[in-house]
Image 1 (tube, rainbow over the protein chains, first blue to last red):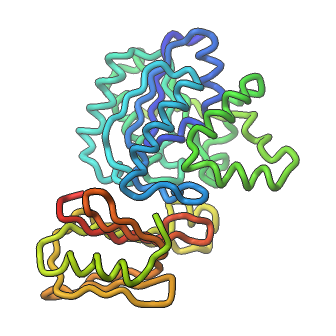
Image 2 (image 1 turned 180 degrees about the vertical axis):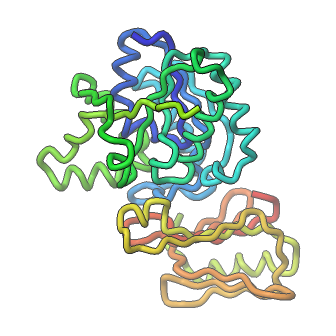
Length: 217
Length: 114
């Protein structure tokens, strides 16, 4: 059992698809979870199906959706870091790494979950993961918590090998689906399309995959 | 947002002319375009709170619509606009939503910074 988990992702809903089952299982075991979410997904292209958000109202809507998703998953401590969507890779690195380092120092997690830098497709994902790794590299090796990374670039298995953590989350699949649905502005169209395809179109959600980060330095 | 009605948009556009106003302009294929379709060349551009002054602004097309703003020394334009909204604080929001309802382009004007 983990003592304390820290999740660091850049966008509301990043937590829902890849890791909400894992988080819900840890929460049911009583592990406290802090989620540092870097942005409010201000630049999302999904505006609802049919559209109900605007470029200006989207962050307010997504903040409420994120709070609801956290409630469903059992994330007890949500930190909104106030960076702007699609600017993470352009941010002052010292500032970004410093903010993450201070949350690591404060929460003292036994496990950190983030994106694998270089293997997570969206520039914000890669920059987020890179900042977490940089923050941890400031610590002596023996003080660093375990880091489980999400990766989904096409070449991730080729370069990183198979994920070393493959978790069946079917026992909490209802919570996971509810968390995904809580991000209604972003996921409603997707969920409708999946339902229309029928069958077990959502079966891939029952497995969550992580690569344990291997330190180079 | 509502589907664009050109006369109404033109009337609001005229109100922003000949004064310093703040521009939000973006175009995007989304961060996943080249991931989902490797043959797709993804491109986009974004400016937020660019302060501009235009002498003349016009909406044209039969839908999706185009808007051009004539600056003292240049131009701003956007194409693919489908929907619009005038917010309570007088901001003019225009967006182009693609066939899946996803935002592909946004052109917005405000008297104060966004």
